[in-house]
Image 1: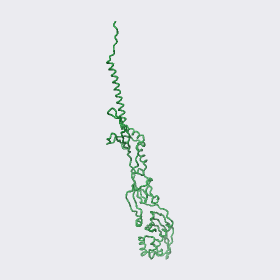
Image 2: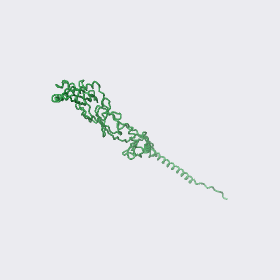
Image 3: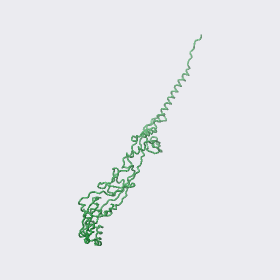
Image 4: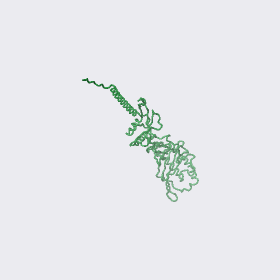
Length: 374
């Protein structure tokens, strides 16, 4: 009986099997390495940074991502702009794309859109780059800047005020930066301008406001002035009145009564010359010429009467334009009894007087009748 001979496993097959196992493991490793490398490479691309940025933007983390610049105008708090910006982003579909013309691979720029509207520009910078698989690199990026594209306020104001006044917009004083250079004389001060510096109108332009501002206008003495606004133009030409000193009020009232008495023939010496009035006016005053003409040619027409009496006297609406210039309203009722008929006549004076200080003395440079609707 022949002995059993044990068959040997072929060494070639064993080696081939081992080779296949090693080769399969190698390629599995290579494929896994390539896959992981590609995943790492993709994760290191600047687009991933932008995706994270967009996601946080959609979550309302604007304040953490965007540093807002100073306000576009100096009269509004930047919170107004920021709140409008955040309100616009709320609920919008946020997207991004590489900015046209952004060719620097190490400093790419991306545009951010809310719907179809561009709302920001984001600049990135490569801070590190590690080789990967010979032909690739793992990059690390940081956001260098985020420039929001902000609304521009559409509310504009033109403000016309006397040059001696100050204008405050939301508590901030306007200055020469807002002056347009337009100037106008004020007709009210036509005659006073011959003797003293008078206010004239200037124009301020306040542009790009988002909301209607709080406007406060003050005269040179700090008193708040009223104004009107129509179609974006604010006008403040009525100066606020103050309290006149009693001595000055007495002086003004005395002058007005003397002037009235001159024209009724009741001022002592007035029938002979204008000298009794001369103290009231500058030496070259038109009003002295007018009074002298009246004395010469028209005074005779005034009916003879008893000495007049005055009632309801007042000096009001005192406005101080400068240290050397003021105006006030004078009112009184002058009653005269005709000597021939006993008829009683009452003449009402309701005039605005303009005074300037010349050589330390207050004199009249203009006077105007106040109409009933003023």
